[in-house]
Amino acid sequence: NAGVTQTPKFQVLKTGQSMTLQCAQDMNHEYMSWYRQDPGMGLRLIHYSVGAGITDQGEVPNGYNVSRSTTEDFPLRLLSAAPSQTSVYFCASSYGGSRTGELFFGEGSRLTVL
Amino acid sequence: QQQVKQSPQSLIVQKGGISIINCAYENTAFDYFPWYQQFPGKGPALLIAIRPDVSEKKEGRFTISFNKSAKQFSLHIMDSQPGDSATYFCAAMHQGGKLIFGQGTELSVKP
Image (tube, rainbow over all chains, first blue to last red; front, side, top):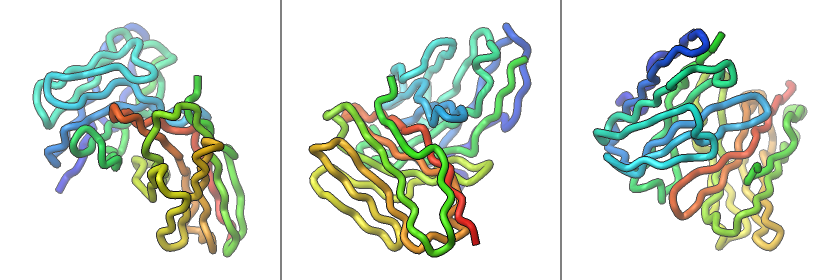
């Protein structure tokens, strides 16, 4: 059982480049979300989705785009990378709009923007 | 603004001691308060959680204390072990499903 799978694990970008972080879950979870983790800032919510076709903004959405065409996949797109987007990104999912509360996290994608 | 404030940022405890991490929140709409544990190179994983209708929840060596009137909650780790060394995050959830995390506490348990 794979759980939440994120790719790539590591990525280096130049300022202005675009890229997509992939996230897939095989638990049939309705709720999926993206966080970024920075020292001293904790985990900050970027975007989230309560089901296929439905997305919404979190705490720090600027510079990121998401879509949810299937239950399984929730890619995060960086439109024009900036050094401030250097971070570790985590995708997470849970059952039924997260009412149960337990988020299952992937192992993270470490992004460096030069 | 930070909706969930966590302290301390780092904590060093001797083996067998008690580790205490505190969190405070602003929004009274939060209705679920979990704690997550994260080991280096891994994603966070749920450790223990509480809803605001109870004041305390205990699972093994881990206890959450919750003070609804003060809008504060804390994690107590009894008989702390070196294997407990990790980063701990408190969090709070809106009814809409968004989980908002605190800043994290890096715990080191010395043998």
